[in-house]
Image (tube, rainbow, N blue to C red; front, side):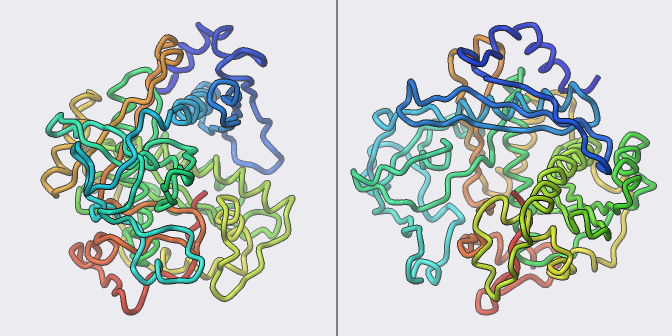
Length: 443
């Protein structure tokens, strides 16, 4: 059984309390049949209850999960839908509305966040206002995990979906997104997974926007278990490439790419995962690749190709980003990824895990603290979810580069995108020349 199986077993033990179409936290959980020609992975779909009855905001989070075994896929779908449920429950009355300058409590300074450039804010109809020390927003308390002190960060970076409080002067200044949310039966494992997702998205967005040529992993050096996952894709005629996105913190981040020459299949699909254990990072990346491949196949089968426009402004939604690379005519835009001259063995990637989630969280927090980054954590677990034995955590790392949906609004602010590649020995990019003009491929 996988590491996720205890989560599945807990849900099974409380099945009648968790899943019920009318009164359950989860309305439905269904296994999705594997379509003809698809790689051999299990897929599950879960839908949470509609929170409108007790929040005033109609929201029925839907999630999916893919894994090499049935229990793992079900656990992923359940965990994701629970994290979305918990992150949607908040009251603006509990979140103080003020600017950084006027706050009577400790806050993260707006300049610490990587958001948008001055040039973007100067554009006509740009949807986000500049986040400055005088910008009124709702704040939420989190815990700085290094100092164990409370510090406030923007509520829009904690809760999702987040509705900006425009009637009271709060204007959109960022895109609320699920990066940094995690659910698990072990609160420390949930914290660890949440931090790792922020690390993964930062590594991917910097790699993509700065067009970095990262080392590729020799497939035959993978473990037998992960070679089996690669073969599941390749038995369908596809080709899998794995990359190590090495950043300043040294945490293994594995980026996977699926290429298919058949006109009936998505041309390109991508995924990534981060973990102190590189074996788990590879496995999670490949299972996420299977999950995204299924979405890509649906989009390619049921929708016409995305029209290629000069500035790609029609890539606006999560589906748009994935669908764009289903078309082989757009595959050339990702060619830089595959031009890396460097190959490494899997064993060249450092193993940093202690095997104890609480200790691993401390390792990550300390490593990032040495780089002058703070790890902020918020326990979002609602009483009903905690009663079932689950924990939902949100991680925020100010300064790490975010993933944003909608190519025209990709983040061009902050420092890491413009300085980290050069420090790592890459050519990097300069503000006067701009970043990768092509949209990223992540949902």
